[in-house]
Length: 245
Image 1 (tube, rainbow, N blue to C red):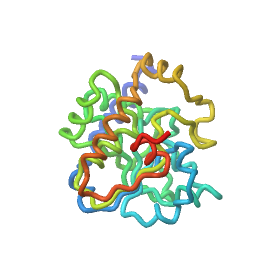
Image 2: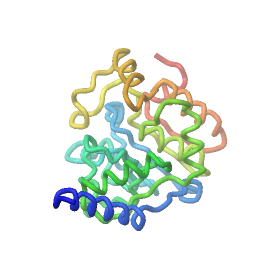
Image 3: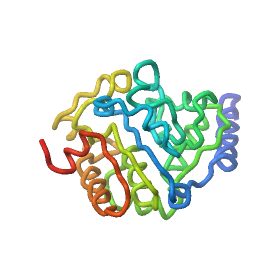
Image 4: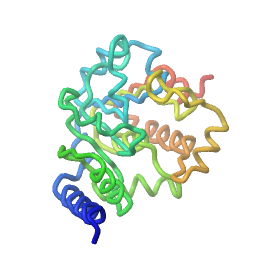
């Protein structure tokens, strides 16, 4: 066995052990019960209102992928300064290594896919990134329910968080920064993104296809089903939910 192949084998072995000992299960039903939760997406619609101070007062503030990088300067007036939970794909284009900075104060980094495919994704992550902080994956039953409701398409990280929270017994929830790809992202998140029907077609034809319109329909139905629970939406989502153009 060559030196290069030997190193690759050792790296794979060590990464496997790291996954075994640093990946834990996140149970949304237990964690979110009776909690006040703010779910803050990276969409430009989060910047229509200055909700920063309001967001920071919630028990848990959830963000996605590289969203914590947006919390700087005047952005904080709109999206707050607090991040407790990040749902993350662990893909390189989402800059996962940035999440492991202690100053961010992130309590849970969640890679939701609790499946063989998810294990492979985490193994590849540990091969590339020398980090030791715990990564969480969704409880098996929670992941299977989430995955099943979308059929053949893959969930976005935003949908994973929305579905997990909205299917729990939370006390209060605030949702902002989501347009389900109908508007752009805030500057600095993914500036190349251009909303429109062509992008919806691209997402469906992708190797790991997404269906934002289906996700939106499921999320809005979940919100409507929570009649006895306090859910507050930003102005964009409120209009969308009520069919106001």
